[in-house]
Image (cartoon, rainbow, N blue to C red):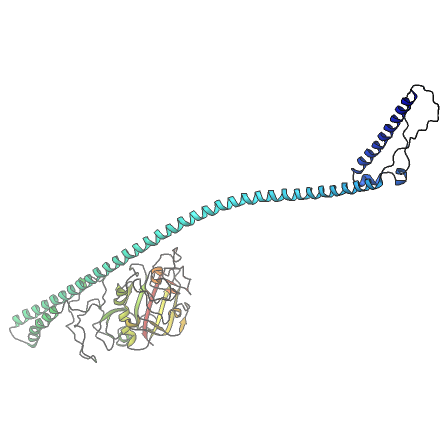
Length: 489
């Protein structure tokens, strides 16, 4: 019985020592997991190295001991190297955990940014698709507008050509009518003379001259259809204003070369029988009244009528263009600008061909008189003005400027004349289409005196197509009155 009891006692002591050691190890492990700050608060190593003792109370039956009983209550010492390695491993794992937390935060930030970018990309793609559809619709609409504009331009050209043909036929009929009216008037004069001779019953020289007139009149009837088409007249003057006595038929045998055109009978709208070389020649002959006169430039049988202004700047000015009330449409074709159009006592264009023959006979100067809607009058004068022949597209030759309106025509110097159906400007498009007139356009205009006559001055238009002089009120102001005049320098 003594041996088993001692063995049991030893076994209990051994288990108690193991439990003490395990408790110390658990305290060490839990202390190391609190971090560096908790380690600093631990007691010093000297206190750790002290031998801790565990005291236990055992209740054992009384036994008779025959020998000495020795009990060792010292606990097993903790291994310092293992503690250090555990601490290092714990620190390493803590660092790895911190790194993983940092990466996790960065990846979370990147993921949120990616979501935002994807959302913006979806919105951007939707906006691009919308803009593309809108652009495609605008392109289709512009193509339709261009086609419609071309169709309207074609219709306008056809209408203007038909209008030109009708006006040409109308002028021919007017000329025939005036010729026949003159013939009837001459015949009535012959009848009156014959009646007088019959009453006197004595043949005179007047009767002989009267009997010779029918032969001349018959030649006029033969040449009615071949009458020159470039003769301008005042279309607004009524035919019943004919004077009682008409001038007889005139031929121009004093020209240097043979006549190339049929004779011309003067119209009653002419102030004086003439013909004169220009309005300065009219002034020199003593005619000081402004009005319509018959002109024939030197070295040609070309006859024309023009308004002579004898009141401005010492008089003698041949008016080649005038705008004052918008009664005449200046958006015309090449042939119309060549032959001339309008009313001689109102708005009209003399004609490029007539202008060429006038400026070829001497050195002429140009004066442009302008008036705005406030009554202010200015002028621009150029010391030389000439137009080249049609083979050079009636190119403008201009001299130096002086005046009060500013120089808005020198920019057009040496430029060919351009109309809707003859594009001779330097612009990629047709300036006559945008400016609604005919002019010596460049790229396109600093002056546009043959444009649209707008009432009131400032106008609204898609293009600058008014009657403007850029140095005087700019291109968006349509002038009230304009007159272009020439006379020998």
